[in-house]
Amino acid sequence: MSTIEFILDSFWNSQIWLPPNVTWKDIEPNDDIAYANYRHLILPLPMALVMLMFRFTLERYLFAPLGVFLGIKTRKKRQLIPNEALKKVAHVNRKLTHSELVGLSKRLDLSERQVERLLRQQHAQYKPSTLVKFCETSWRFLYYLSSFLFGVFCLWDKPWLWDINNCWTNYPHQSVPDDCWWYYMMSLTFYWALAASQFFDVQRKDFWPMFIHHITTICLLSFSWVCNMVRIGTLVLLIHDCADIFLEAAKMAKYAKYQKTCDGIFVIFALLWIVTRIGIYPFWILHNSIIGAPKLVEMFPAYYIFNSMLLILLFLHVIWTCIILKLAYKFLFSGQCEGDLRSSSSEVEEDSANGLREESIYSHKG
Image (cartoon, rainbow, N blue to C red; front, side):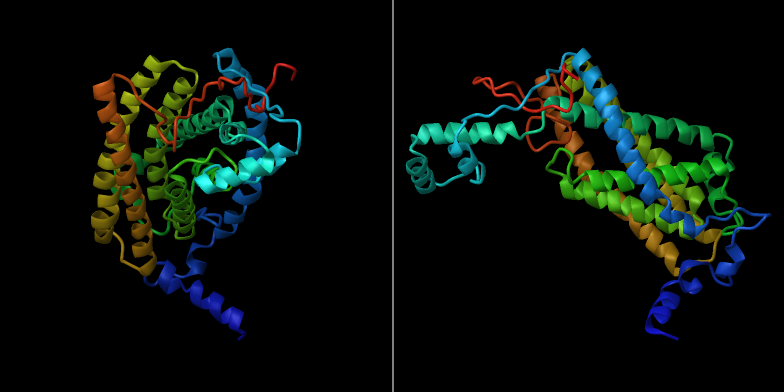
């Protein structure tokens, strides 16, 4: 046996991934039971590329025109200084010490004030416009809404939605219905696309917590698929999608400057988030997975890994709940939801006094 074969055999040891006395042959898909097929986990990768292309098409031809219709201004990029000075400044960090500023002003034959203004303009020129942010948010809103509605459609007639103990009844010999197969594959596709697009989407201060969240979600979905823990996985997906709908809707309203609408949706979002992420998720799903499942299923190593990932998600929920509560506190005292719900700075930028325009993905000229 080669080293690679030994490593693969050790990694896919059924004693790690499956309950005692169950082997991989026992859960091979057959005519009687449509088990989760681990080979299908490769499908979301090419599907993610298709989803990204679909997203960019919608952003250009649907969401951008919608944003313009709602009053969000389009902005075009223009050359600030038609000489080599701009190119030189473009490579300089925006935050300079006084000595660096003096040296740069001498080198460019400009006053310190002119250099500072040029740096501010250069920095602002490459900030994503409000319309770009609106389009990104609209895409996530559309996905979360569609995913949640499809999840309700899939699970409404499933026994484990109404009695969570059915997630473990006769485990792991459980068939995966076609609708649940699509629910899982589309969710994996979305999170693969989200993890990839995060590196070229609008950067925010919670970049790494969000990236960890996406990767943890992908691992959790893939892990539960391999172990055929699909039933409990569908409940996790359903709980996570519903609050995100209102988060993205509130941001869309804020970008379009419908502040009262944003405030109202934010209140709904905050309440729904706390109920689902801090209430239902730990006290229904996690409680059953940690306390209820051992009463119905013999424990095995993969079970503990699965629950560890569920706990990581809970930890991230707590972090974001603290952020939401801070925003709610400001809302109570200021009367409106200030700033963006996920941002390193104000997300809604005004045109600068000097008439600087940013390039948009949509223009009136088409």
